[in-house]
Amino acid sequence: MFDYTATYTDQYQVTMSQVYFHKGMRDETAIFDYFFRKLPFEGGYAVFAGLEDLLNALENFRFDQKDLAFLEKEGMDRDFLDYLEDFRFTGNIYAAKEGDLIFPNRPVLSVEAPIIEAQLLETLTLNTLNYQSLIATKASRMRLSAGNRKLVDFGLRRAPEPADIRPAAQPSSADLTPPAMCAADAITASRYRAPWPTHSCSATIRR
Image (cartoon, rainbow, N blue to C red; front, side, top):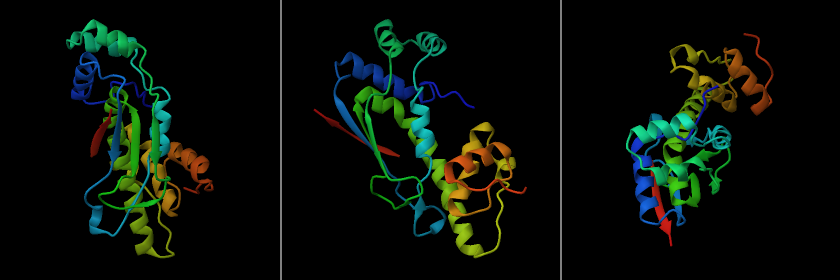
């Protein structure tokens, strides 16, 4: 599966983190709220998805030697790189439950952590939750439209590369027949206890 090291982020997040480091702010606590402003598909709700994958990615979210070598070439200074070498996420995450209905302009997930940790997590959070929640919401709307008719997901063949294996499992959270892809089926079976098938952020700093 994809190896989420801490360079799975926008470079400006690392640049901002270096500024915090040199201004002596690295131990200050920040709270980043994840929310969205507009419902997709002109619907009345969205379905929250991707939390489990985000938490799993955090288990190994750190800078390896290749990451540090790349950042050194990009001009990051030695003191900051030494700090990143021991980087681990030590904060707290408060969130809705996977599969909950969520609505615009209210926090769905909050990250409370030292400001550098919260900043470096922002891109991964948006990337993971936005897409998986979109897929789960679409699957839910399809189920409501189809009634009792069987629906099968074949979306992987049109989706982006391997990163789409886990989103491919999201339709099962909306009672669609588990997906046609074997790897996604295995995730579906363990996460949703389904049978094997036959076929933008805001931030505040707490001082």
